[in-house]
Image (cartoon, rainbow, N blue to C red; front, side, top):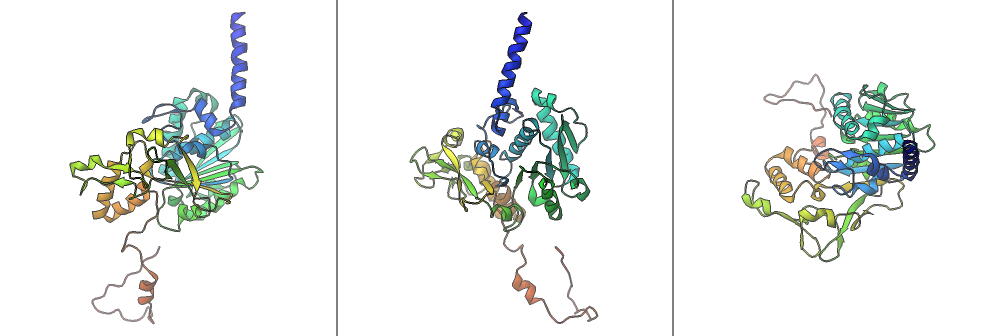
Length: 362
């Protein structure tokens, strides 16, 4: 009799708990177990800016970001919520099927299932890399380079991860997968590359929100930006003094300790603020690596110095560390340079001596 009472009580408790899960963040708090470097039950602490992102109700959401800032894990949580609670078919798109979709399936999806007992019970068919089944709901994992893989998949939720690396011709095809759904949602995230292209172009048509916090010293509400928020205490990346590099408030110039970021960047002390048109229906979320709980300012400073002596490292610094589009000086052909070499030439004209004729196609 006691066992029957316990079963009855557990069933009622489980049912009430399910009814209370009305948002992706609530779902993550109840069911998601995270891997290293922040193992354990999911919480916004290591990446507080992702809490509001989880629960955005906008139909279209855009994330222009630095690398390793919790955006992919956020998209995973939203995807799991859509499948588990709303019973929606979902499409997760990566740049290519191999290795991107295959590695994502093994390194992100499979690990999430291994760590979470709830997820392991939810999905009954996980062997197929591109198709996972959870009851009547389906998760399709596709590469953007395959048109056939993006056709004939009606879904209610689409996540596009690393948009700037995707086949641009197939993005519009993927977006049409939600056309038949009365209530759908789409996310696009990426580290940017160059201005007015890819994720940066899409981001410009959104609310363009930045994560603004209250300075624990002066109360000024601002953000972490390069180089104003950083004091670099060295002359090169090998200088031992670089370890003392630190963050400061752009207003009072007071120290912002890296060790207490969870406090002054916490959800009770910070919020997303629209820097674009706040009346836009599409929400955009921008963040850089100065906010990272895992990366101290000294790491950012070292990458900055590397960029001073190496052009690819400069590009990587702005894209992956600052989450900003960037063009390295001297690497872009200008309109005036193109016009300067246009002339009345024909292919049968003899080539000038000692001149190498080349053609570049983008």
